[in-house]
Image (cartoon, rainbow over all chains, first blue to last red):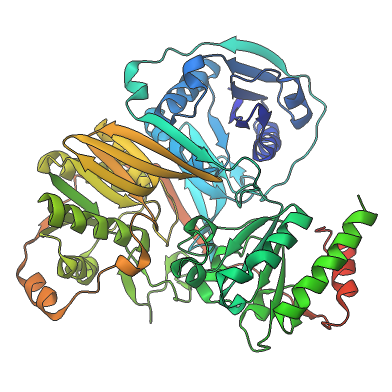
Length: 322
Length: 248
């Protein structure tokens, strides 16, 4: 009956989003008078997971699962859920979790609510609040099936520490060749860059920067702050920056703690996509830019003067607060 | 190759979002509906397969009669024929289940949908459809080539991309990057005229079950006033970000 959590790791380390998912699951388990079981894939050491409320870990060791494969992972999670008789399964909204969740839902005959932003309003009936209309609204959804799957939106709940002992148990799901019918040929990933999905801070540039050659100061700010870089839609359409950096309604959502927008006027589609960022700073030379209405802090002025100065000050601040 | 493109009928990206009837229904008053942007990238890619590899391209939507202008637009872009499953769906699983019937009936090799609709943002119909069909599936697809019965797809992952291969039948959930924004086709007069005569088949639903229910909607709390900072006093910004927002 335990609440099941899919724990993701990357390069041998658990992802922060998984700690958030575990913290959330712990609270849900409390509402339902049960405990939390985490599922890990080829994790060397799972003791750390106790800190986030996980009491039991099903650690899957299988070389074939070294690379993420949606169908195989979904099948493994399905078998873990059945073993634990779990009624609630919680996962993050990472690209991989979003890939496997619909398959898992069909296999478990479960109702699935994605982009969930808060604890269930009640567990009987089971209702959750989720983002809809690209964060221009919320939608209260009732899951009517016996087994429920929750996709927790990033940074919606936060990481909460508990003092549980995580006991690990090896688990060997039975996988078939069909689970691997989509073959991962190659993975191309920059290992030294913060991704928009995982970033605490995102620094973003718009058309106001006038050309791709002027992105150095944006990248410098991102480096000082340990931030991810992003851009507005026109900037990616013009090829100044890769599509993977486009944030907004048809691009990526941003749910970081801090979003700094430089030279972005704030079209409605862009503002929708960054609505979940906690604190928003706007630097623009147009005092009428719509972005100021959505921002917490605003500076009106020439980005080419302000950003280099701000970078110097941020460096000093970082040196002092290191 | 037979391709089916799933077309969601969604409010234009510039729409103001409001609700009626005690916040249980989306207010369509003054709202313009369009082809879901994520589906439009897929439709354009399908047109490429039609032109270069002789594929046939049908489109499908699960919705009421009000979605037909959106289907006609997709026909004007170049799809061969349209199917509308005549129901107002309330749940993603229900949509996937209804679509699965049409995919089986039409014996499609490739189904192209969008990674999510921009209204409910469920992001689950394509994946559910693939699982119901027992077909292969690639989401967040930003590149797709088909040779014979073998597909090579590129999936965007957090911080990069990966290359996948799979046999047909295949379901794809596409997004920007599958084709460039500048490759999107605007229907011309000839296309619009032809689209009027193209077949649009209305199919009655099989009354699939639902697994979730949208109870009501809420709008985010209004935002507080922005705090303006003098560009000559950037220390204030750093102080506010550190002490007030606790963001750095």
